Image 1 (cartoon, helix red, strand yellow):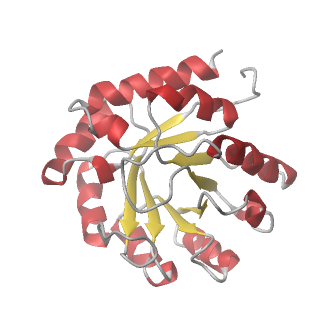
Image 2 (cartoon, rainbow, N blue to C red):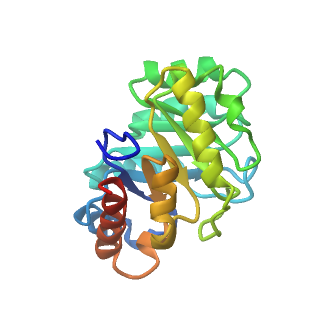
Image 3 (cartoon, helix red, strand yellow):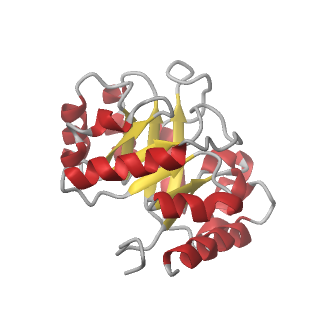
Length: 230
């Protein structure tokens, strides 16, 4: 246990949104060799966010080549319509936005009933207090540190305080659910986000943008380990 009381290691979740879509298998394998714990997959519909990415068939294809759990982030309207498709395609973790789901308890329970871990996502302008009535039911929380929709955005500094507030909400609910952070994660801010309470680091361009996903993933892990062992 380190100075923050952390009892679990920080996990690295490379985001394939920034990978080479013509060579996903190659890039995923390289990230896994570098020590990736999860493979993060952003699903966007062009409505909830201003971008379109991939659907369940691509998740199924990734499942065939990935050896790590698939962390599927649904940035879509009415996600309940598609949750079963993504779990059937191989998603081990499914997260939905609090802003997109009218009956959040029902959605979380549905994900869990299908056998996947259920997470809730909050956007930069959504308060941590929005999690208070669902916190004890969650397997994880995903904090967006950029406005969702596109890879390669700059980290929003207020996200550090958001991480602390989310951890406080979970603690009050008696939950040890890990906190994931997504957006603008790079070597220069790894220490800060880990110190603020992040347990899972989603990284896209920091892993796939430099041409060597294996080396980049290993470097992020080393930085995270340095912070948690300090």
